[in-house]
Image (tube, rainbow, N blue to C red):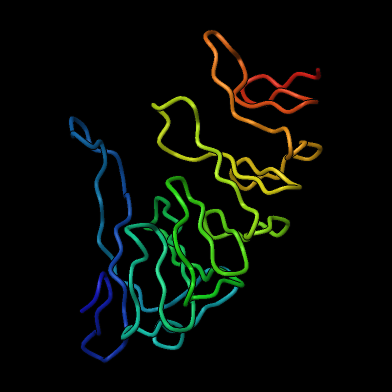
Length: 190
């Protein structure tokens, strides 16, 4: 029907999922997948039939990511060994929601999100994406505004956003610094 959704013979909206079942010997991917079908939206807080949650007619993938939307909600797919689940991105505006960059960050007109989690203290209008000076790194790990810095979804308490920057040096054991600290593999006080 659309993506991995379809209607069952009884008319229920269902989702096709793959789950890693067990390891295989001498296999290229070293795993075996089982296909199963689910007709319930369940994210730990909601446990209702898909057709009560998902508007399949407006449902779409957002920019080849693990984010999806319909006219009512934005969803994030959380993959795990049992096939994963769609979860509603709380507080996201479906009409303006978009991927920000490689690495899990996204925005809507009001907020910044990391892998479906709203980053409350970031100002979307002053947001800066911090691209690594190491060109081998394809994913963004840090974002900031004029007051706070985030590493993925962790707010770096005490970080000075105005002087925070990413650095690269031969043999260097940190990847970012501000006027007070170094951040990365080794955290040091200046």
